[in-house]
Every structure is written in structure tokens, then in C-alpha cells.
Length: 482
Image (cartoon, rainbow, N blue to C red; front, side):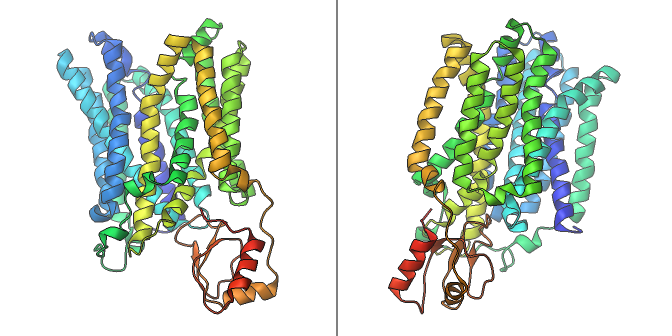
């Protein structure tokens, strides 16, 4: 690759293309399936195959990525997506309903697997590639995802009307093959691999960090549930908001605007945040609390009003809330993982990979459970009352996160700066210092002689300073263990 920035552009373009294929069938496949006497519940099952595979394979890729090699994972996942897209295009030629359903399910399963592997790799390598601008890069990467989801249905509808069903999918599959050939020749993750010729160093089983280590952490559970509850707040509207808008006098364009404005507002605030460097200035747990509150306000607005304009505005506001919740999550999960006691030489790589997998798997879970929950609440309680019940649950979790997850503590006055003498004493003391301002695990441990800002959150070990002096410094810095 020519540079890290160019690599990011290529990976972001591929991310957009990945989600173009994800949303491409939405306007044209259901009609095709109905014409072949496939019922709506079976169509729903076919589409549900994607998030299920996305969820399950994310865990597999996160665990095995270091053994399988990241470049190979990207290339194989891209081939999986290519094959899945071609199969989805060929189902138009199948007349037997059973074979039609079978090949449709295979296509969605392969698609979910390919997207999961590709995203896990990207989320795992970004902390190493961009340690000082991680949240900025994650924001742009999410924008690429939103662009792909938005363009997919439009592109599918246009190509279908101009040519035919098969051409829609074959054209996208051709782009996948071109990118696969380019990445096979140019993609290089060698500078991210370990110094021992990519061979895993032996790790004492007692020091090994796994998924169970994360799930035994109460702080991690609070963090991952904040992601799930936040994303479900919009996904549960997928099966119900369209009908709600129709009943209030809206049309298909209104529905499209409601969902599109959510993505547009998210993308817009990402751009503004990156320009003003907001993600580096705002405490991560405070950001999650703010975003969660915004999501609750927007969901209440959507459920309580009968004004179509207010519903669209509420969806836009929810996009802002998702920004504040989702962007800090990967750095937060990584920091939680790095705090687990372990002397494993592969600790950093393992934590990066597992954190990426957990973050990605949570999205798969929300895509699966969200529409089911939204439909169930609407049928049993009605649109507004169902959302009110979900809001009560969300509020209870928000209060829990404030009290037990560090939300209230994050609202305290920022750390007091050290004077130059204190800084020099710490530089010369041999302290291992972790920095809140640095979201990357790779640059979070600063050794002796560092000139970086002393905005500390944890002191690991020391030599040369008296205990009472250390305690005084800790008080001054308002140090807390994550």
C-alpha cells in the first residue's frame, strides 16, 4: 500500500460496497420471491439468515484471526461476498420454490459471514494503524457503511428498471472481483503482525484472555449492553414505522426520508466532530451517557407524536445519539480488555481482535432481535405503548450505567494539570502510565521519557518515588481504575 491513509480509503470504499450488496435486494427481491409463491414469513426468514451468521461468525473470526492471517481473512471474505452476490442474482432463473429458498438462504448466510469477517479485521487493525485518530477513523468508516446502505436500494431499483434482475447483482459482483485482485496484490498487513514471523507465542492458559474473560467483567457487560440497547432503539422500528407513517397519511417517500435522515445526521455529526476534534475532547463514558439520553428523547418523540415532520426530526435526532454512543465503544472495550490481568505476549493483539469481534457480533444480535422485538411489541401493546415499555427499560439501564458504569464519575471536574517539576519526576521515575486521551492500546502505555500530555488514569508500577508522593499525585490526577 502506498500509505496508511490510502489503505483507509480503499477499506472504506470496500465497506460501502459491502453494504451496497447488503441492501441491494431490499426493493426488488421480495417482489421476485412473491412471484414464485414464497410467503412473506419465509422471505423474513431468508433475510434473518444474514444477522444470525454475522453474529456467530464474528466470534469465530475474532478468536482465529491471528492464526488465519488478516489478509487471507479479507480475501476469503471478499470471495464469499462475490459468490453470495452472484447466487442472489441467479435465483431469478430458478423455478422450483424449494431450490429458490435454499439458494437464497445460502446466499444470505455467505453474505453475513463475509461481512462479519471483513469488519472484524478492520475494527481490529484500526487501533494499530491509527492510534491517535482511532475514533475519527471509526466515524468515517461508519459513514461509509451508511452510504452503502443508502445507495444500495437506489442502485438496485435503477439497474433493475434499466436492465434486469441478474444485471443488478452481477455488476456488483464484478466490482468485488476487481477489488479482490487489487487487494491480493497490494494489501499488506506485515507491519501489523508480530515480530516472530507471525507465529503465535506460547501463552500460559492462566494468562490467556478469551470471550469468557470479557463476559465476566461487569464493566464490559454495561458497555456492550449500551451498544445493543442503543442500536435496537432504531432497528425495532424497521417492521412498524412504515405502517405507522402510512396510517398518519404519509407515503413511501416519507418512510424513506425518515430512515435516510437518521443516517444523514449520523454522517453529518461525524464530519463536524472530526473537524473540531470533539471525540478526543469528550470523555468516552460521558459520551455514551449523552448519546443514550438523546436516543431515549428521540424515541419518545417518535412514539408520542402524530406529526410526520416530528417523526422525521426524531429519526434525525436519533442519528446524533448513535454517534455519541457508538464511536467510543471500541476504544472503551479495548481499554477494558487491556485491564484484565495477563502476562501473555499476545495480549494486545488478542484484546484488539476479541474487542472487534464483540463489537461486530453485537450489531448482528441487534439486527436479529430488533425487528422481532419491534413486531412483538407492536402486536401485543400497539406502536406507542410498546415503545414506551422499551423506553422504561432503557431508562432503567441508563440510570444503572450512570451509577455503576462510571457515567456520573465521568461528569466530575477534569484532572488538574501537573506542574513541570511533577512531570519531570514522573518521567524519570520509570512509571508505566496509561493515558485517557489516547484511545489506542498500542499507544496507551507510555514509558520513561515520554513527552505526551500527563492526563493519567492508571499507574501500574514505579521505582524511585515515595509512596506518599505517589498517593498525592494520584489524588491530584483523580486516578481511577477502569
